[in-house]
Amino acid sequence: MGKTSRDKRDIYYRLAKENKWRARSAFKLMQIDDEFGILKDVTRAVDLCAAPGSWSQVLAKRLFVEGSDAKVVAIDLQPMAPIPGVIQLQGDITSVDTANQVIEHFSGEKSDIVICDGAPDVTGIHSLDEFMQAELILAAFNITSHVLKTKGTFLAKIFRSRNSSLLYAQMKKYFKKVYLAKPRSSRQSSCEAFILCLDYSPPEGFVPTMSKSSLELTDASGVTADVIDGFVTCGDLSGWDSEKSYPLDIDVSFQKGIVDEDQKNRYEFKDVVQPPTDPAYKEALEMKKKGVFSKVSADLTKELKAERKRGREQRKAKEEEERAVDSVAEKLEAAQIEK
Ligand SMILES: C[S@@+](CC[C@H](N)C(=O)[O-])C[C@H]1O[C@@H](n2cnc3c(N)ncnc32)[C@H](O)[C@@H]1O
Image (cartoon, rainbow, N blue to C red; front, side, top):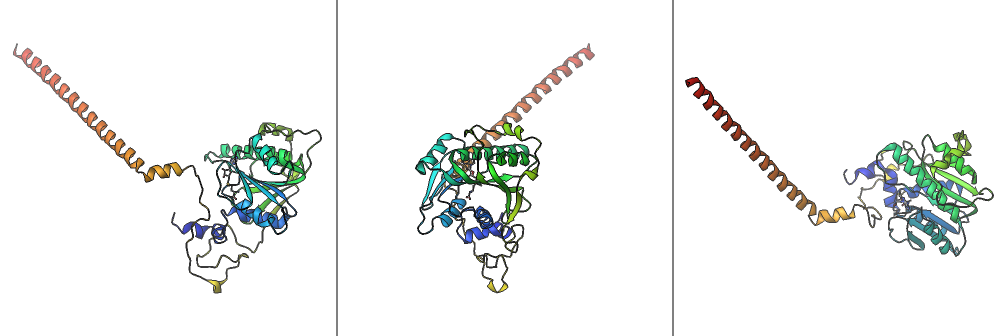
């Protein structure tokens, strides 16, 4: 892929770079917040699966306003470049230790909101990926049940599938209102959506646990998608369309998404705002830089050549042996004829 092709294909990717958001997902959270006002009056927020940090950037921008003493805790397995004011924990959201650390940072208080844009590493095996995503949402809910205050809000990314209604039904047991939100910046062609759960009211006697898994979803059998309180598309419908390709010379800093022909400017490529600090492929890149792969490749080529040579020599020896046997046989045959 060329350096500009992603910019051309994805207007939100380009807008994110223009506006210094670490990922295009920032627009998804902003559009959901603009629609539902979920960040209003929030003083404690938890961002699960936060790296590289665009959702935390949105929290920081919208919560750290003058006079506020808002606290934001961001958690991810991966390290994250710092964001002023945001407390970062490198950890696993499935661990109870992580939940305890969050509560410690809030001085024993619980959070007003927990948001989760988590995604497991995709394997390409559709049913397995779907299952892993569902498990991650349940893990997010489990940690949320430890750290969220009563009446609090939970927002999580989901991939709609045939089992989604079970998840809605589960969430409906703990929250008074459950919506499905589809921001305009999330491609219509993608089954990605966000489950927005309002007014946390766990059933009486509920004890938070970290071990709730999809297996327990059977208690939601017979439910249908109409268990949710609404499917809401968020964002200005006349705004930028995530499915469209826009010309590269338009001014994209204009938020409304109206292509202004007068505001054409020369396209300039910009690097990503925050490259991953410690990506899984970092080691491979370093090895490539050091020429390890060329050495491995040279060694393999040498070995392959030697193997081929051995094969040729063995074939030659076998042919010589066969020729010797044939010649002995011919000689014996000739001797018999002479007799
Ligand atoms: C799509 S990215 C999140 C993007 C982020 N919301 C943003 O706006 O920049 C998904 C993240 O989920 C994280 N993740 C996946 N499983 C996790 C787990 N068990 N605990 C913590 N983080 C996890 C991954 O490390 C990855 O950084």
